Image 1 (tube, rainbow, N blue to C red):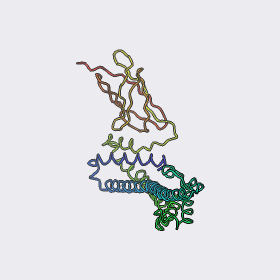
Image 2 (image 1 turned 90 degrees about the horizontal axis):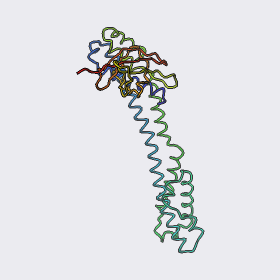
Image 3 (image 1 turned 90 degrees about the vertical axis):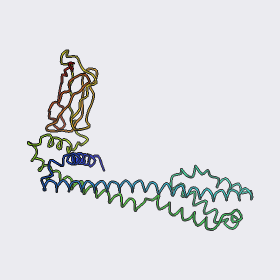
Image 4 (image 1 turned 135 degrees about the horizontal axis):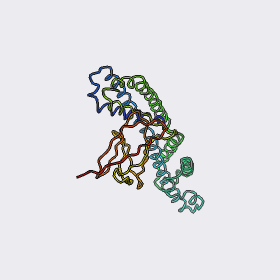
Length: 301
């Protein structure tokens, strides 16, 4: 997925997780349940498509590396036989030309390895009868030829893997568009039923399903936290958006800044050991900064 698709995917997954945790709120509404189940099914299919895409991507790499290693080892074996024969016959040209290190062969770029292996095969074919005395068989040369052809095809591009990966990517796009429709045209509207009577349920849904896109001005909450009695800045105060994983700590001067998605209504919590926690309800507009200064009161024992 690209960054824009991933942002949509994350938002929809968070929203569905929120709905799953609160099924008791809407399970008496058959229409709502049906739409929720449709979204859950589309998300499951999207995850399956992503798994296929990743498997095909890693599978292609694994196949290529495995074939490279097999070809390098067999080419090395045949070259050693050629070197042995060259030493016995005093053929210094062949001895130098066919002397290879296995590690060197294993890490050559594909086309270079294919070229060297083909040269080893061609040289061995020309001296095949003499090399039989060194244990080199016709079957080994045929296998080397097969591995050269096999790796050549793989190096040019694992067509099957590429095709299946592309198909999985196209399937992901279709399912994301389906989720767009479900959320924008169905779930968002159904959630309005709970805007007043189940305000927190509604607000958390809207917060989690907000798609945070890159390349725009950052939406953030910022401010300073001080001691209510002395007005001194407070360091290491935890500032968090309730019901999410978003949080930060204040600096030595009591200041903080936290990037957030936009939300119409959200609860920001301020807490520090020895002080009474404070929760405030706020709204954050997309691409804007919202200033929230806060004073905390010490716990009196």
